[in-house]
Length: 194
Image 1 (cartoon, rainbow, N blue to C red):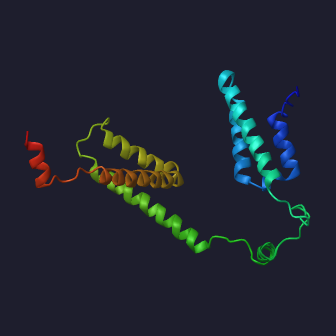
Image 2: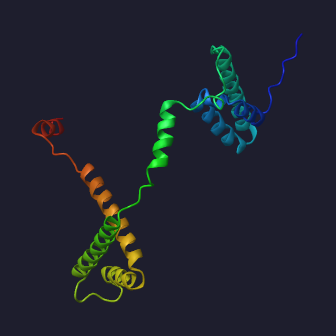
Image 3: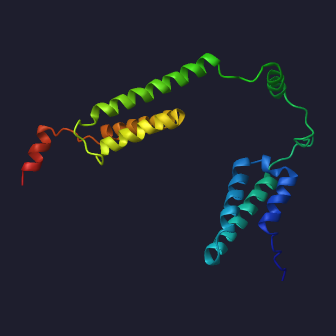
């Protein structure tokens, strides 16, 4: 009776395959096995046993697919092959073109626009505050907080207003999607009939 050989621990298997460059053969499956191994490391007991079994099956299938794939006789390791024409072109373009930088005018325009937007929002918040609002009125408190933000850190106010604008936009989008549909005459007849 032949004794079954115990496969090497998964960490060793992953390191060995990585050293061989085998992860390049099926990168998605290899990344999946790596991610599942990281996840399995955090489990104990029955869950850890089942994850280990599944990982051994995946590793065996990965090795089986490698053995079944035909290897060309003239296949050189990926590191030994010269770069292809596309890789050479990309490298040449990277050397010739300077890194992209944002135009100063565009940067100035963006900061001016965000500052004006924050000022507009501040003016809008003041228009909503009632004249006879008490010191604990929520609208009064929000307006006071915005005014203090503008005095202490205008940049923070700009970011805060951008964040609030995004939230308002999402809220409006959500409200539009959840609007009740109008009932038709056929729907009303169906609901009124016993």
